[in-house]
Each structure stands twice: as structure tokens, then as C-alpha cells.
Image (cartoon, rainbow, N blue to C red):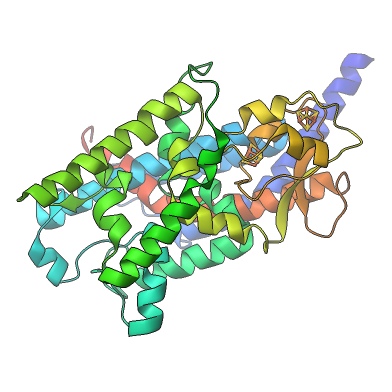
Length: 383
Ligand code: SF4
Ligand code: SF4
């Protein structure tokens, strides 16, 4: 009898999960193919089909298993790796090098990324000029489309952007999963306020120098995208800073701590996104009546967004990126996605399904192009 009930339950949830995946299936099909799949060559066809299946299978399993983070992370990490591959590939094709020259700067040929946005605000307000040497519209990774994408995602997801939209976050997310247990168990959590200091510093320095200072001097991801040609002591110093920060905050510390240390301790855009958590409709709630204060969720949070005090007070901090890792770890289903204005503990499934649909769709649509491109590039070696 138990077995029959179990099988019927499984069938029911299988049916529900398939139904929930169907709109994602149709939207991603339309987006990836424009209604006309391109099977002009074998590699393109296989790349398209693989990414389409991957995206939808991961989404299906999120619903079917009730686990969020482990499926989210697969696409998020693949996105970060493939975006770097796509950028490097594009630069090698266009410039024949991973570095850019002074001529590229003068001709505004630098791909724009969302991390530059905080530095553009004051110069744009006071001088009515964009201080980044990239193309405003058209071209590869142009400024307008990146700003619009980031703005929409941030208004809807808040700091959720850092776990569902950012094309760099997958790097330290990936390295933070390599070890089973952390070697460094405790880091002073005051460091999590550091991105605000970095944010203020880069906004002011960019306004004073009219240069994207974070981009020119600090960004660790220059190590896996593009960087200034090393022709002087200054450019060599910059390259040294990029490589050290990438090695330290994106590889070594995430492996040792099992935390996303670049995102937690450095990223100025993460600081802005944390503030936007205050205005977004989606949030993470703690159902105090279900919570038994085991604090399993606190230990696994990769962004130092959850403390024992937060659990006791029933409120998640503004640093939360809505990654879902704490929810996967909670044995009581007490910490959950929620909608502002709806009391904690109510509409848990509805809120989760709605949030996952919106955030996953954004990630799928945003990432698909570069993932297909990467698969295609790899397959070309075979076919
Ligand atoms: S894991 Fe769940 S039950 Fe344990 S403290 Fe966190 S919210 Fe409460
Ligand atoms: S509180 Fe939970 S959802 Fe938020 S960042 Fe931490 S683990 Fe992710």
C-alpha cells in the first residue's frame, strides 16, 4: 500500500514539475531559436540542443527535488566560464590578443561590464559624459544594453542578481565548492562591509579622475577577460594587482573558506545590489514557528548573509543573494523564498515557484548565447 501511495505521489509531483517546466521550455525554445532552430552545421545543432536540454532539465529538477542551489549553481558556473571563453575568443578574433591597446581605448572598442556602472553615475550626472571607452549601442557588450539588463534584474531580483545574473559570480561560487569542509572556518564578518568602502572609493575616485578606476586598477576578473597591454611599470603593476586579487579572492580564499569571498569582500556592485534588496518584491523569509534553531543554514551561507542573530530575530540581512543554499540545508523547510507583504510561513510554494521562474528565466536567457557559443567552439574541434 505504502509503495502504491509513494508511486502515485511521485507521479503527481512528476506531472506537476513537467507542467511547471513547460512555459520555461517554450520561452527558452523561442528565445534560443527565434522559432527556427539553426541546424545548418552539426556543431551548431548539437550546441543548441545541448544547451536547450541542459537549461530545461536543471529547471525541472529544481521543482521536482525541491532543491534550488545545486541546480542553480550548475548553470551559474557554466555561465561564468563560458562568458570568459566567449570574451577571450572574441578578443582573439578581433584584436588577435587578449590585451587592449591605447588605440582600442581611443576607438571605444572595450567591452562594457556591469561592474563599471557605479563609477559612471557621478561623471554622467555632472559632466553629461560616459567615462568608459566602450560603444554606447551596437558592438560587442555595449553600454546601453548592459545598463538596461542590470537595472531590470536589480529592480526585480535585488542582490539576487549576484547569484542569478552576474556573469562573474560563478567563478568564486565554483571554487567555493571544491573542498568538502573549509580550512579557514572563521573570518571577521566585519569584512562584509568592505564592498561599501570600495564602492565609495571608486565612485569618488572615478568622479575626480573621470576614469573607471575599479576597472583600470582593481577588477580581479581582468585576469580572465581583457586587460591593458603591459608596456610600462604602471600597466605591469595593474596586471600584478588583477592577478593577485583573482588568485586570492576568486581562487584561494573561496577554496579555503567555502565562501564567495570576492563577492562578499570586494565587489562594489554587490554593495549596490544589497541596497536594492530593500525595494525588490522578492525576499527570503524565516518561519519562526517551524525553525528549531539548528543553525545549519548559517554555516552554509556563502555570502556571510546569515547569522545566528538573524535567525533568532527572524530576518535575513541585506547581503542575501537569494541563492537558495540555506533553504537546501534546512531540515525544517523553515527558511524560504517569500514575497514582501506576505507573512512568513505562508504561500511558500507559490513564492518559490514564482521567484525561481523569474530569476531562472533571466539567467537562462542571459547566459544561453555565451554557453552555446562555448559549446560550439569546443565541438568545432571534433567536427
Ligand atoms: S536550518 Fe532551518 S531550522 Fe535550522 S536554524 Fe536555519 S532556518 Fe532554522
Ligand atoms: S541567506 Fe540563504 S539565500 Fe541568502 S545568500 Fe545566504 S544561503 Fe543564499
